[in-house]
Image (spheres, rainbow, N blue to C red):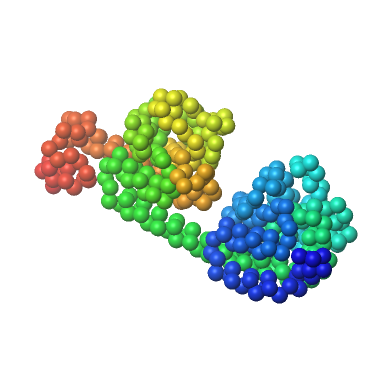
Length: 378
């Protein structure tokens, strides 16, 4: 595009004819790519990224790795974690300078056209209808001037882009809610119909692995007497052989999640100080990534549910974590109830039959009614 064309970019009607075609996009990642493609069609960009605050965490889209991750982390920190540093409500465009690819100087106040000398990047806040985000462009000074010369035109253009991003996130959240509801309903149904705890947890893990495709899945339960975590139920090529394997409850990523009572994502376990290598060494399995969520019932943490090695992606993400957190309380309550039931059964059989458990009964116990009938107690 010519110099004059760049500076008149926001008057350029073809782009406004293209933007409405993107309104039906429901995937935020795809929408960010669409925006990047349109901008690159008219500008020579050296770097592009969009960051959006989603459920109190910052989600980054379409970074082409030209902008160093440390720079993007610093920009996100300035715009989303330290609101007093730059007032995004009164600034439409914030120029910044990247030096050595690692250091950043930002201009936060005043009219941007007075602060663009030497600037090689601009941050453009995306806002409206609850959206909180920012678009980062790294380009030459001429391109930056196109966004800083006439702020009224820039505002109108960015308002349009904000609407596109906001719309895709609205659809995304609706879709995510439906997935949560479907998973919760499926798990709730399993909790209602499966009697044996081992069978129940195997079913739950199967459901989780269908929603969060992963190579392995497991539920580890805490043994209070020995302070160990035991693989009570596990699925996967290696998982089936791990059942009843134990390790200290203060070891591993699972142990860290339980001790701190918080869900944890580790997408490169080899760099994690909490990774317990003994399990891999003994089993021959290679763990790459782990999503671990503690199972808490009331004040008691009774274990951890894990998904291991995401399939079809390099890493677990915040959505995966929220999916697993959505069912963790129900699973924990089911485990606690099953344990209480077994305790009551043991006590009942000990009193009525002189036995410590119902094992060996003609009719193994699945509920109170068949057991009582079998003993002619009712």
